[in-house]
Image (cartoon, rainbow, N blue to C red; front, top):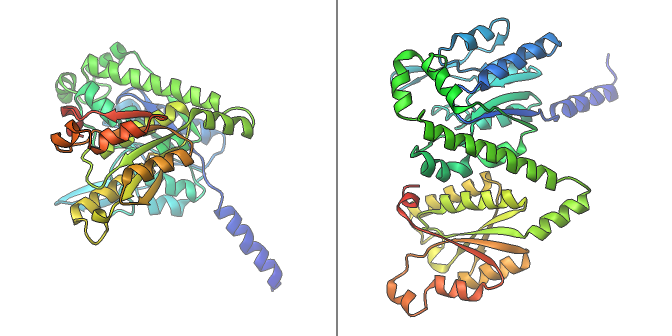
Length: 385
């Protein structure tokens, strides 16, 4: 018979083991075919040879023989089959991976949106669940799927990326490996059928795999690496040094409204600016009497909640304020929280208010002299976001 006190000790040990968070390693590329999946599988074989218990949670080979050949000898957790609109589709079986509880799991296509009915809407959340359960994850996605770059990618390439990963996910990763490849070499790989099957090559060359698109994405990926290195260097030193560096940069505040048509673009801009400055940032919303929950219409309320959630995913601290005068409370908050940079959308107020200097924007610019204020333009590209 096991003494009661020994049983309690074992229970506590089980809780400690369960609470150990897994590490996340990300392979980041700028397009399909740069070698993310190939490198993950090579690493999986290397770890397996060293005695690590590693499995494949999800791999997308796109029919590439070289990639499929590398899965041989590795344990693959069977995918979950889901029927969607009369078609059987396979998704990563999160519950099966959690039950298997390997030391390491390989998860491809991290930006993927799961089908309705799955536990999580996005695969990156599956990765976070695995890490929370103490399972280490090796994953991959491309730079155009980074949420804060969504507007920049659209303007540079004309491509609207629907599936995104929040910047907070990448920042929380324990290791990020960026894979680079000359654009000419990538196009040659495409022509040789090493990325997609031959029947898809011509269309890919005419659309996404145009030289100018790939060059823009490669530049974005390299810039992201450089900024990450700069942030890492700035974060070095003692805790006091880090605190002083962040304080000297000044914090960023993005001003939101319940009916703002371009809040997503403002938040992405705020995230990028805070990242470059290596500082904290806020997403501030002021609830006026006309925006009270019982008065605001359902569509506006849903729009607001979606934007506040997006702000959290991008790494902002969401601040909800109440006042009849949004201008005063926003500036008071900025002054009391060491904000230096404020981002606000251009107002769509009546022309007569602007001409008479009585618009919210006129007042804001007049009374915010001690801050660096960015007034985001409302051009056609921004309207499409």
